[in-house]
Image 1 (cartoon, rainbow, N blue to C red):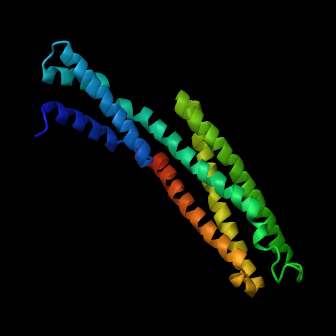
Image 2 (image 1 turned 180 degrees about the horizontal axis):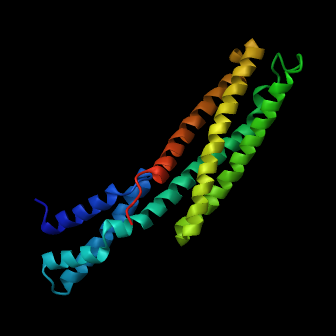
Length: 229
């Protein structure tokens, strides 16, 4: 049977956990730190001669209410979610910008008729989109780290704006990339059997799966139920 102390500590941590939204691992780490802080405070009071119940009551009271604590913890979770999204977005953007053209080199249609102007414009635009994504990802990594370290509301707002911009850029890149792939297949039937194209499609699919999970986590962190002040 859990002791009174354990029940109260667990109850306070459950209340806090219920108000937090963000990366599961980081959230678990933050709650573990909170538990250790509570347990250390209880132990200190007990060593000072207080009964278990009174020591536990004072420790929980000093710890603060979930409404008081959640905004700070949530800011850390938001910064962590942005760093995770930005890191994945940067990796995918760099790979696509560096290796996108390699999927076509040596193909049987590379020396054929010039593609339509609209196709070339879309291809060029896609490179620009991924360049923008890479830039936003770098900004997200920087702001995510600074926001978590300094806890500045202004940095938090900037990080949030960059996160929304990055998410929008990724959505635009996904639409443009899908359109370019479909147009390529329409222009060249052999594209579906070209090995570099197949390998590239598999790698891009895996990258988009990781990006979709990270973007979903970031959106849930920033658009979940707001913490009461």
